[in-house]
Image (tube, rainbow, N blue to C red; front, side, top):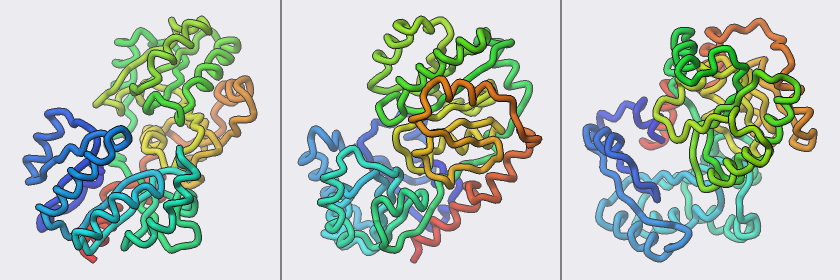
Length: 338
């Protein structure tokens, strides 16, 4: 949402944010400079009643014209119902994934969700059909500022030098370290790749609840010296420059920003077939079944690039596919002003 917020013409709009995250100071300052406020709602899963109480208080006292909820399942009905109760006329439900962690609850609440939103939005056709079925919905891509990820050889060599991987074959992944991203399988893939070539290393950008478990698995597989845990970063674009291949074996996904960013950097991407088909922009993007096994994934990673597309030509491909935030933000603004 911050990508859209930064790109959008906000001249006659006042946009506030509310979520379960505690933002850092830099982000709060950015919002404040644009006349926006941030509201912390607490833990939605563990303290639901407190969360809903804070949400209702927020909606009652601010008289919003639009509420835009980003989620992964029919449980968005809770926020949509609160917005409807407080007479918010434009209520947008936007789904970001093709699967819910609670499929039964998702099915039970689907009809209730339909009664509470005024507009259904999805990040891809696959994600939209998963949640809304045959009902109408608008596809609003997880667009990015493509110029930010433009390939730069100097940045690439500088970071590789700093990390001590100047001559390495670098595999990369960006994402929260938790179950859907399938890091356990990623480590198995990398372990198999190390059998093929001993110059390979793996960079993991991100953090999450399974980080300690993933580090322990690295030790168990004997690959800890070749795996770099970069943690949460504000300079992801620099790490993408340093990579040779981007690997994304998610168990389920909608339209991952990380894949768009990787392709904007011109990276070859080896991706789980559970990801939405719309995520593919470059010829060098390869879908692969998780059932193929780690060794098969490793062989695909090691396969020579079979396209002449240069990393610098990638930006136009993403713009043509509708993933340039400067164009997509206009669509969201129109949606708000309907």
